[in-house]
Length: 527
Image 1: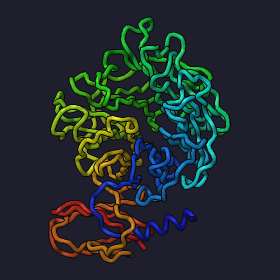
Image 2: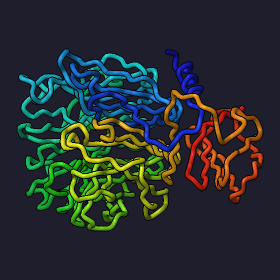
Image 3: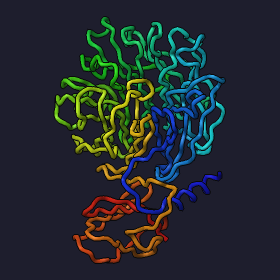
Image 4: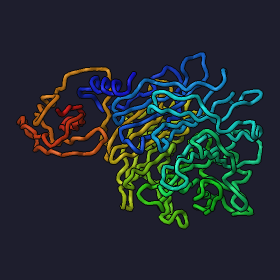
């Protein structure tokens, strides 16, 4: 379907007032896990989500993709990335946009860990239409390069979109998979020709080795606005440091050489011995400050697992003291995991995680929610935590298995786009929420239902609208990219006062209405 026609059709069918509900975007009947969300840096209305899931009960897992061209209000049909070979299975998608605006997805496609012999590797696939269709994949790294070391696990992708000589470089990091033989290293595959060819090297080096005590030393990469590539990986080598440490590797020459610095070294990097919590860590760059990086990780320094971060404002030379982000009571015997984070272009920061503060019992195997914390640029502390999920989700045994190790979030201006997996339907599914940095939900669910607008009239409207409900207090108007265009307050009366919207440009807006009975959202078209 033509993309313009698709978007217009979705907008027509998304009119109406809807409850504040999370959106199931995977919609399948079987397992769906590990979503990765990316917003086009050149178009804040363009989102792409990829995840791993079954197409049907007889096929192996494929990478599934959906795109939105209206800031997450509506989504395309699901596209499935084909396997390189029949019988292969896919995992671990990650997404980046190249300088031309094409969508790149890196992922594993292989026989699986039970294959005999093991075959396959990391693939990269490109979409030139925004994520609706994808070209045949190109091999990044084959497991045959180091078959015993299985160096194809967790392929994170980062693309250089600077104006330097490194512009357009594609970096895909990876690590040893479980039950691999030593040597263990963080790896990087680099392409300087748009993804047609890749060169493999190790990220660690003499005196900065990850060591053989850490069997899967995952690197977490990013590229700063000045074209410098960064990655953080764990290390535990007694001859280098008597304590475990996280190491920052930096390259200003496209990955040809690296400089190294310690993020921190202490027993904090050894979180706890429970194998179930998802203890992934994350490095993020601040686009508004080329010297500002932040590193997020779980730690149990206060007896239970919490979400922490440290940051540098001098490109890694010095790092701040670690700070706890989740604001539930310290040492309350409730663990948090599954951390993700993002800076917007202004340097504002959002952090999300899986939270158990409202769980009936301690440990990993209990009910959970997705929570978030927001810190505006220039602030020293985070604002109060807020809940992303619209319900507490009971624990399911599938969460003890592989395939639910990460969630994803993107912050665009003041809009928080969040994807995660939970089991509220009885199986693991991918959910999406669109909210602002105060936690107010901006999503419009049930997109196939065309229902009347019970609160705001007329709709569509030209210069004035009327709100026909009792006891409304605040009306906030958002454009589809989430910017607050105006705020109108009313002192709890029942008068149907006309509200002037003539200053709004022609287009579609989300009206948020706060009443004595709750908060509601309605799509309104301005003529």
